[in-house]
Amino acid sequence: MDTKISIDNIRKSFSRNGQRLDVVDGLTLEVRDGEFVAIVGPSGCGKSTIMKMISGFEQPDTGAVRVDGQVAKGPSPKGIVISQSGSVFPWLTVRENLMFGLNQGTAAEKHRLADHYAEMVGLKGFEHAYPRELSGGMLKRVEIARALVVKPEILYMDEPFSALDALMNLRIRDELLRILQEERHTVILITHDVEEALYLADRIMVLSPRPAKIQRSFAIDAAHPRKLSEPRFQEMKDAILAELGLTLR
Ligand SMILES: Nc1ncnc2c1ncn2[C@@H]1O[C@H](COP(=O)(O)OP(=O)(O)OP(=O)(O)O)[C@@H](O)[C@H]1O
Image (cartoon, rainbow, N blue to C red; front, side):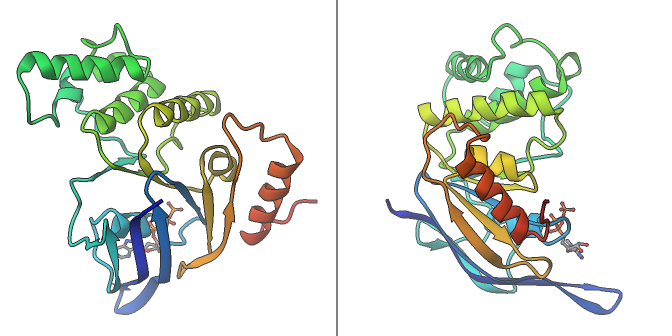
């Protein structure tokens, strides 16, 4: 498979109270077209900063991020970010939210596309509902549908499910996998949830404490759905937690 995203030795520091804070310290990673890469790291190590640089919203001090071989100087139209905070407009219905990013086509075509993606994420029948009428899990589905409707080549997911309760989190993971089987996207997921990464990703990159760099990577050569209770996943989970400095007895 071809390289989709190439992250070449990126560094980032911030200045705080006149002091330099090194946040990312030489991160290098190649993501193949259609690959699902999860990045896990300890709290405050620089995960969101890394995601902002990869998605083009922040520029690295040195190094470069390339998408399809082109240096990313800003957010690429090829990718879309799904974050924890959410971006659903409360004053628009589900259908209107989904239509918002569509620039081409007639109103009827936009309706059809919006309703298709609403159905895909399990929101059929809620096209005319307002966000305040939806549960947290349904809102997250609107978020995912809003990202998918513009047919992005890359999904950048920054702790997208962390605000959901545990059960809804598990459901949404399965929906995401189902959608990715229907429409292949390249995905970068930032998470602190090792099981989420093990369940979803083709590869897991474990970050060091701040300043962040890749400490170790784990390839997961296993089909979906995955049963995380299997010994091989438990062993990998223990190894990842050990990398994060959490050794369980
Ligand atoms: N724009 C900024 N200016 C100054 N410092 C910043 C800026 N953005 C992030 N930082 C600092 O960089 C460090 C890493 O922040 P970042 O949000 O990337 O970490 P994180 O791993 O995503 O955190 P968390 O696990 O809590 O979500 C923190 O100490 C933060 O205060």
